[in-house]
Image (cartoon, rainbow, N blue to C red; front, side):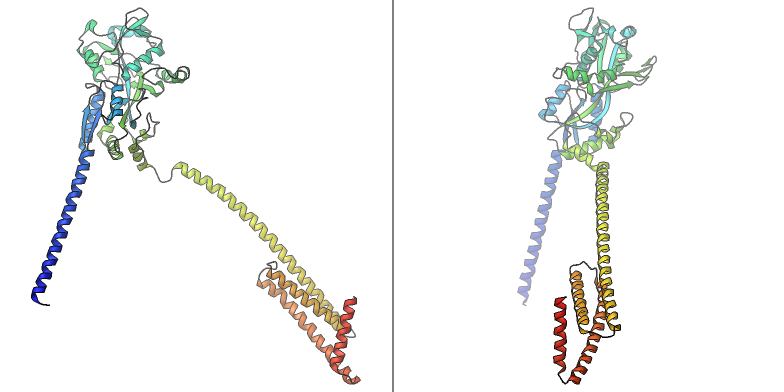
Length: 497
């Protein structure tokens, strides 16, 4: 090959290599851009926890902080009430929301449950000089001014339901037998100052410890009183659902529970409360719009259970919470997250497998028993048939011995014996071919004595033939004629008999 040709070929290879390298670089850059753009799109999420200035909002900020530690861009969006939170998630304006599990969640078809969290407590705060007058039945609230919480909030809905259960009626006008109801926003309560500007009692559903409750107890002269009938209140949901299934309300009693506020939670001197204080509570629930990706929901759940966020309450949040009955249909991401820890074979699968194996074992055992019984009966029939043939052979051998020991050896009995032996052999072979006589060893055990008897009869027939030939020679006739005559007479006698 000439030098110019080699140079051209080398230049062609260099161009091909350079083109391939550039194409690979372009593909890698496009892949990085696509992945980076996708990550950029999925990293931005929004969370609402209601109004700012509450402990629930503080919990929302803590969750957002932990999400940011995992590389997500999380922002907190303020909402006016529980109804507003659910409406914004349902419309897709906000991705996630922290809402009370007791709030009536109907009418939000695009909301999906992500995870239940820790319970919140309904705080009943009353002015300290009125605390002893309230009583366990809350009858002391009659004639007093009571703030039920912001309109369309879980606090207001739960306060109305608790008062209805206690038989206390509230109205917008003061009266002796009813309480004077108001629905102030949280900032209005904080800015109201002291004295008559504040109501006698305030309901507030919040994570413990509550920022508002701490402010009212330490600076505004309030204290906590118990709501001791939480379990009876929850159980009343049965009668409530049966009697008024379509009643308009914001709270579903069946999703409430008894919660205790620990002593010294809000103040140590004097202690508030001074003993474990029972009240009505409801579990906080994280919900999301159904269009949020499963991968994002799984990341949020990992953050909830595998970060410092899980240790906000005591005991800490555990993944077993996801096994609780959901308020909403579960988000697909939650279902996928649950599937991570579930074994390939569950306890129910093991039980079903054990039951199936038990049934199968019974069927196999029964089948083996039937098969073994059939096999034994078939073997018994074969043994019986073999024994019958052996008896027939023994009988034929006895006849042979009798003929052999008789004074004169006649041709006709020997021919009859020969026919019987051949017939018996043919029948035995037919039975063997039909599978009625067992294996080849059984057939051999049967044919050996049968063939021996046949050979014995054959030797006796040869002896008779020799005698006939000697007689024919003495009489001067042919041996064949004498033999044919003897055989013919034997056959005639056989037909006559």
